[in-house]
Length: 254
Image 1 (cartoon, one colour):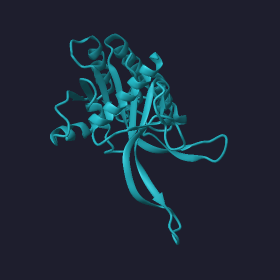
Image 2 (cartoon, rainbow, N blue to C red):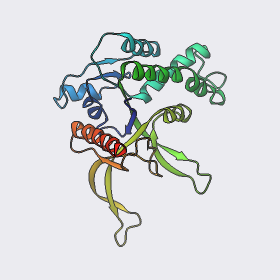
Image 3 (tube, rainbow, N blue to C red):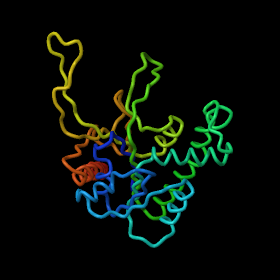
């Protein structure tokens, strides 16, 4: 079965070009997400089938069409899941809380987020699983990165990079995914005499982290190397990722 992949990173790091380099992709774009269209217009990636999804009902509907319809797509790329989370929350607020965003409604005791995570969001993930099992399609979910506080029960709390989603919804998604990649640039810092803080002295290559550490959320169930180079473009990033997956499969076969 093709894996369920999440790639998160800051804007411009190469998420959309990574997804566009996958095998026969179709993109679902969250409202206002223009990264793929900009890349196509600039000639950086070729023409790629895509549709902007304005509502939660439409997202579920077109996902079901991919499951049952006649098409040649082999990869679904959702760009971005944090954007889709926003329309999921709107759907929940309107259907479960009569459009009340106040403490008396959606925001009270964080109940609206839990309702979204355990209702509409789990339904969407179940549809993605059905698409994967029945049509053997890759599932690639892209996300913007935010900085969140990690409450550390064994010591001091610290900040780390996570997808820019509510924690309840992200925790459900993290548990569902087979692979979570964090795209980042290597930054070289040092502190010279007389300086109070270290300063960035240079920026290195783009890499995808595959294992959790204090810096960022990442995981994999495929024994991938801790880092995978993203190269200089999306095709290299996707190719390196697939090569790492295949190398692991060949190792297991031996």
